[in-house]
Image (cartoon, rainbow, N blue to C red; front, top):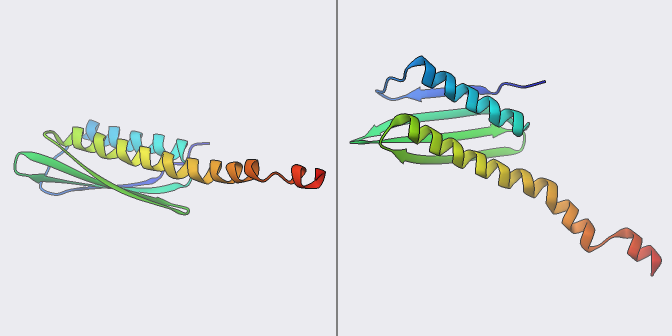
Length: 115
């Protein structure tokens, strides 16, 4: 079962074609499949002179990740920002999973009982 997050895209004086918006929604759906805690992804795109900036914010259960990126094309800026969000989500996810495992490996209950 795949859960689609709420995807909000703010375009500040910029037009994106429908295929580009569909690609953004698909990419955010991929994030939700991989990281089940994500329930909302918000992306804001601005044009600063010749450069486009994209801010992305992913929220969910015990998750709040925000990034930004810049590029000469709006789609490239969005891709960079979503790549950064994915890396941050991976880092948070791995800490949640592997920190308790590391603590258990350092101080296993079986070794205490045997001594």
